[in-house]
Length: 336
Image 1 (cartoon, rainbow, N blue to C red):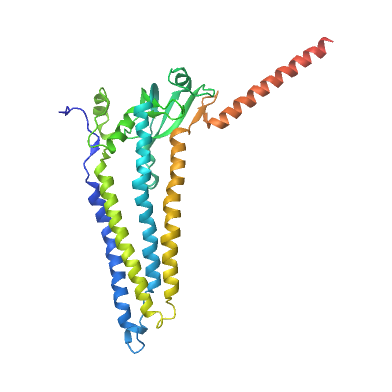
Image 2: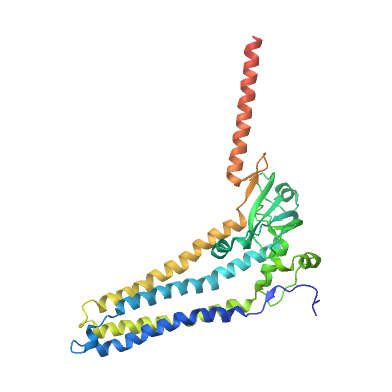
């Protein structure tokens, strides 16, 4: 049995209900749209007074259904594919990572609007020495590694730390992540996961700064709810197209041919491109951020991007060499 004094970071799947409740008002509106589609053939008669009343076009309702379908398709692909790849990448640190010491910088800025929109309070910076990575026996990186690196990382423990364990994948020296925050991430997709021994004191001193994370059950619940939405939207879209078939001869602004055309285009073309292509692009950006991003320390103590720093170092060495050559040439001329 786990020691109760060790904080268990995995959170029971309680946020599924929040996600479900948030979708109820939208579901109610979409059911109202479906009611309009069911009732539209009944008033599609110039002799009916309701025929001349303001109405929502069924084609516009179809646009809404199909747009929402694409968004939920993106979410399902994200949860089924992107999240699994992110978890496998995170677990690589547990299997392959080497441990070095470094610092974690965190500033809890009191800007609630910015934090709500961009979640800046979920991110901090890790600083570690690249030479320590290069000197590790498991590091097989071929390029030059020197100086310190400052890298933006996802943090679960919202307080600054000094000389803590940093996990680095040997093939990617710029991939450093705080070990305790990675353990919290592993807890987010495990039933239970206990943080490293010796973390209790820091946790007790910063109990209010420790963020609980969701368990695996929450992801499964979101997937099931999203699949339910996809089934509803598919049925509703097909039904609206069938209803447009019945009224297209009466309403000049409704076209059965256009409705089925846009339905097929969205289902066979837009959805795969946006859902799969969008998540693929996002994954490439995320993978680069995790494995290759970071800023090297400059001589003045500031930090720049790795490529810019390397170019600057080369230009400085070239300038120094040119200056030395000019001084040597000048001295030679003076001597003659």
